[in-house]
Length: 138
Image 1 (cartoon, rainbow, N blue to C red):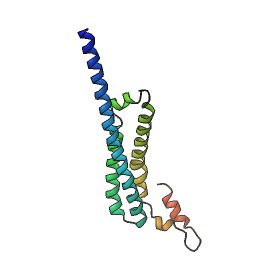
Image 2: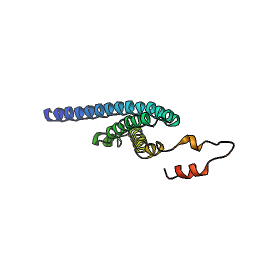
Image 3: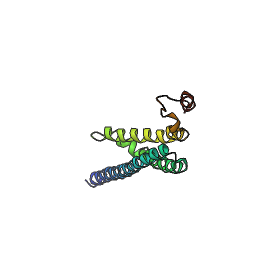
Image 4: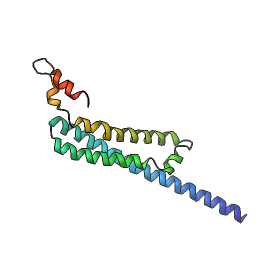
């Protein structure tokens, strides 16, 4: 009886600790992704305004937030949580969002800093195709 109680206590404790760990990591990832949304908005405004220096600083902060969200949803505890009934699909979705946003912040957004959006706007009902060609690779 003692052995069964001890085994049950250990299993329940491990389950509670694992649930708590994933809960804390999820809360942290939510905060990081929320911060990333605000930074992405600021980045868009800075890029459109042509403030490249501030945009680079904002991008660095954005990349830090998205990397933290990706890291927080990529540990073994999170992986195990994705395999549990009821919450596994939600945890998988959060992980996929964190990875996608981090990929955008690292691979796509830096390319946008080099684009002169002012040159791409139509002038006198014409688009400067040379400027569009220069921007196309990025």
